[in-house]
Structures are given as structure tokens and as C-alpha cells.
Length: 169
Image (spheres, rainbow, N blue to C red):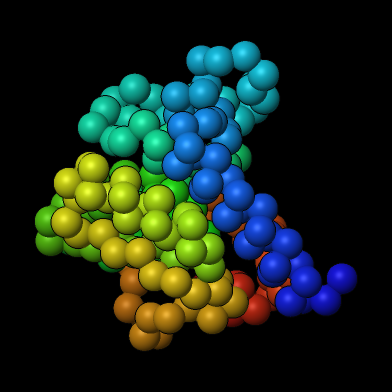
């Protein structure tokens, strides 16, 4: 499958996922869906209640990740964070909270539907120090060396050119 075919298949899948969440359905098991049946025990309950407090329910419902990078990252006040493949924005919003008003959290996604959902979640959460960018993780639309920490929640694996993603990061 050509790189553009892979990219389009991923875009369609995640665009449809965003539309499901916008329609009130669940996608993943990281947020509100974790307590419901049918969730994979490895990918359920990745975020605790304290982390999800104040986050829009749709941000948790949209999460299709397989981990919790914000629990592992040593984020400090004033840092700039970039989430590759930010989806509905949960990890960006959590990162923005951790870096505080002197820091910034960027989310990068190629899917219009996910970007719209993420921006809606940002508004609902009242987070001012986050920004969602449209683009590809193989070609990050930020200046070189402009971020302190890069996180990603099961997205790099979706790229047809993982070496380029890592070089770009």
C-alpha cells in the first residue's frame, strides 16, 4: 500500500471516529467508556479520575490511544509540549494543565474532524495555552527545536514512514 493510501485510510478511520464522538457515541476505553463493557483491559482506565476532572467527556470518548503519555512524561511548568496525532485533544489538554499558563501544548493532527473536536474540547475545558495544528507527523509545522517534550499516544505506528517521523521529531 502506498504512503498516500495508508495516510488516507488512517484519515478516514479517525475522521469517522471523531464524528461518532460528536454524535455522542464512544470510541475508546480511556475515558467515560472505560466503565462500560467491551473494553480491552490493557487499554482501559488509562486516565484516573483526578486527571479527567474538568476535562470534557468527549475528550475521553475520542481517545483511541493505547497508553497515557501524560502520566509518563516529566512535564514542568513553562515547557512547550507537542502531541503527535492529538486526536480529540485529551493529552494536549492534560499537558497544557501540567505546563501551566507559562507553557504551551500543541496538538498536531491531519484529520479535520478530530481537529474540530479537539478545539471544541479545548473551549469546553477553558484551556488557553493549547493550540491545535493541522499537518502530518512526518512534517511538523513548527520551527526546529521549538518544543521541549514530544508525546504521542499510539500514532507513530500508523505512519508509513516511521523513520521520517523520528527524524522530524
